[in-house]
Image (cartoon, rainbow, N blue to C red; front, side, top):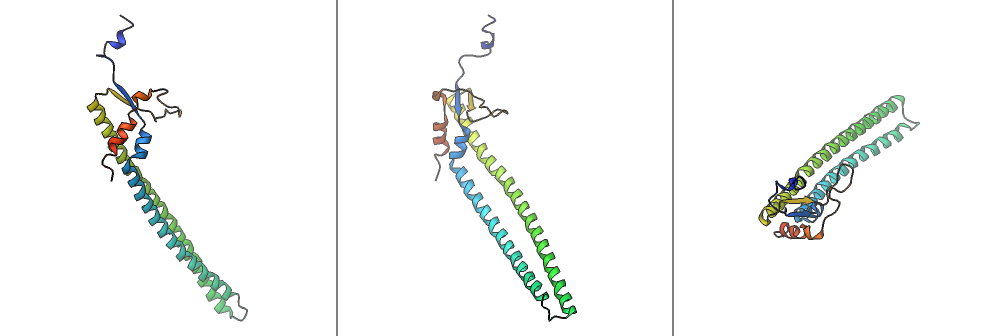
Length: 179
C-alpha cells in the first residue's frame, strides 16, 4: 500500500510527449520573417550611422586643411589666430557630432533589442499556444521541452524515447500556413 501511494492520485498512465522548442522556434516560418525584418532594421541603422560618419570625416578634412593653412609662414599673426580658432571650432564640432552619433547608435540598438525581445517573444508565445492546443487535442498530460537546460547548463531531460518526440508533427503543424 505504501509503495503504491504516489500512484493513488493518478487515474492511469500519463500520456507524455517531448518537443524540441529550439528547433520549433528556429524552423518556424515566422521566425525567418522576423529575422529578415530585423536585418532590414539593422541595415537602416548602419546606413544612417555611415552617413553620420561621412559628415564627421568631411569636417575632419576641413579641419586638416585649416591646420595646413595656419602653418603658412607668410600669414599674419591675426590671420593665424583666426584660422586656429576656426580649426578649434571644427574639432569641437567633430567631437560633438561623434558624441551625438554614439548616443544615437546606443539608443537605436537598445530600441532594436527591445523590439527583438518583444517580436521573438510573440513568436515563441504563438508556438507555445499551438503546442498546448495540440497537447489538449491529442490528450497529452505533459509535453516537455527537450532543448531546455537547467541552471547548470545541463539538459533538464536526460533521456527521452524518440517515440515521444512530437517535434516533427508540430513543425508540420506550425508551418502549415507558411507562404
